[in-house]
Length: 552
Image (cartoon, rainbow, N blue to C red):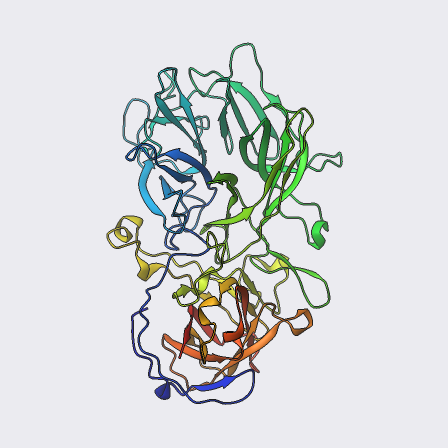
């Protein structure tokens, strides 16, 4: 979106306030702020990093300083999961609002003899672990989920957390394969006593002590434990319901296993889904385990005015992630789906609390994170920044049955997948702000688009406050009602403004202002909801591109 002075009189715009009365048409100068990357997803929207495993490691270029590194898949195949390389993103632990891409850390395009392949392997969800020898030398081990036959147990190493990593377990007997026991969605952990443990599985969970010399094979004298926790297809009524996405953390004297869980049909008032991350905990790295509960639900569970539980975001999908403590605060890292499939997933984060009762049999309690738009901006997003509309955490419609996703048969708002150019070309600019937009589309009558949360302290005492929506009208009559706190008056929501959309409005990108009533009296964080209305059913009234607030 280019900076521009808005010529609203030429747009055919009728401006309403407080869901009713007509007011004067204002003119705003070009904004001084630029399109921001701050929010949720926390990584710029042009890159798609699902399956994120977060770790705090020392910055190799700044000894004594620390960064949080996120290792994940790389959704760049567009029509399939993941990609043919893996990258890492990182941020200073003292500035989690600004992330940088540290580049490609692994690409498997040659076999163990160094012979080139026709194409690189597709690499799925990885994990990383750190091993420190007696002299203090650090070695980082990367475990990609390589699904090429014979390469499932792949491990690569580097002397830096940002790579590059080199595969170290090519088989001497067959250089097209690797040696190792780890399979689907590996997780690896080096304990305080130097012992190494590996976890993996799809539907059935596995754990084994690994040989610290190979970091990939089972330690002699030990064996693989199958069905470490109960799977989702098990006949007994277990609470674990393991699906995939193994991840392991040690917190004080407890071992915490994070994984993707299939909910039971009707659990939480919704159909069964593997769009949740759950956890179990134990006094030992191999169990027995106690089920803990849900850490994050990608469906963003909410209740409608009748008290019925609804998914307020993508109604189903997959997820993978883990938890991380950064400067004394805990976070859950996970991913969301965009568009109408699972091939353009994006990195998400939410604050959580973690409590550990030390001692044998002590309980681990992890709160459930809230699906939100603010990400690391825990005090609320700056409303005067230009935010991509695609950071919405609520997008629903009047016809959106779960069984109709993913396809084009439902009607209701959703976040479109919008790839920029390649990551390499994006990095030639400051994170390609021009590509940091996922438009919100199919905004039909009855749809709701919502954001949690904006901090309105900056407007205290201002006379007139406006919401400016960067949008493209779609040539039909409609209106957008703006609600604060909740999208329904029955739940305490308040309509504070209305934008009238007419069929003759130019179908070009422009910011449309909505005068807001009473927002200058708000303090702190508040959710904002856009309610779509139109006499033309099942056709979108507009495409949303950006959202910001301004005082006249």
